[in-house]
Length: 487
Image (cartoon, rainbow, N blue to C red; front, side, top):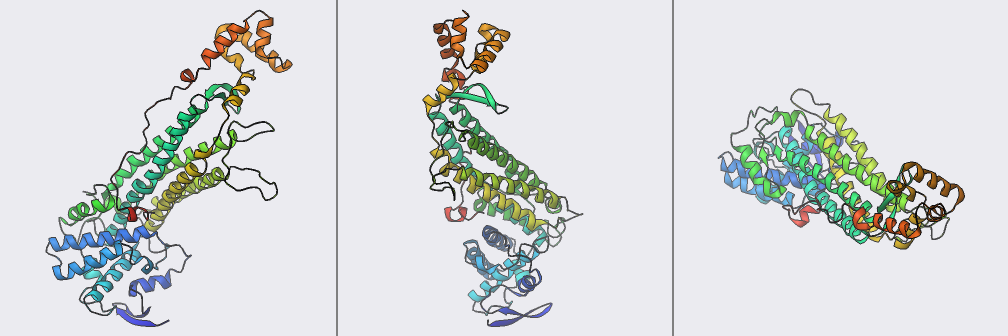
């Protein structure tokens, strides 16, 4: 491999000749040889947007010559567009402030800007990675600003889209199964009747409410710590810089950003991210519940299940044509991973000391990983399972009518003790309750059927029919290409 020799304040170092990164990145690449994990590409693109906005703010404040600033903006916007996604070799496991990733961005932009001006890569002049690209900034306020930007984009992009789609599909199936009356179950035993539509509607509302919690918590991250510089006090910064930058970045992020009046607390602690993990856990718990319910409703001990799984073309390695709840099992594993990520973020957030939390890359990576997994899992659950589930209305009603649990429905008519006795007698003898009641002169067949029909009216059972959904509303969107890479 051909190398170039580049020097900075710490000496000379060999760097791959085609690389846009510089000495700080190369040293960190060699030093932090831990695993093969890298921060997601949207983090890189957020850095491009942030550096371009910083250059525009510094030009407006008279701190950066326009001739240099314009070229920095061009290079940074190329980074924002994805040109330099492969120029970030720094490991996830690095300095806890994210300094190496920030310097990686500074060096790539400076080298590209100098190249545009006709100078060789590595010249460090006329544009310097620290003096010009990083002007008025510190890794300690820039990296957490990137954390806020990338998580807001991911939550209001892929995650909102997936929640919206899953909610819509669950709602459509709830409408379709509105009059599919069936046995309810409590304690895994037969219970009072419900409709299949009710079950789907309950799942839909779980997803809707989980999203609303995520939405509210994510909106808190629209306050950014840029302007705090190294320790939150803003030393070496310029008044007006942070507000100008926040306003500039709002369109890229898709939500109005504001500069925090007290940036120190967003640099020293990341409580907002820990709280967001709590809401992601709620969504994971909802998906776990839905998938567990589907596995139970599509299972059987020799009889017909309440629902039938879609044919996904997958089967057992030993039992031909056996159909398993594969999608549900995959989603359940995703949810367990999300819960584990939350534990890591909680521990990382607890490590803040005085003016700085030094677990920022870990916090960012785990949250983005959770958002990506939950986004994909909801889409797969909707397309690979929810839309294809089938049920037989007559079979469901037949199973209900044959269940002695119907005695509970007759409690208000017969009295609790009589209903309990007749139910037990039906269990023990296998004689239908209708026959026992008629034989003992308690209810005629006509009275029994009339009462049952009134109770089992789907419009009376399904109190959620026609309920207004609270799914994600239409949200301001970023560029489609950028949005697809938001996690």
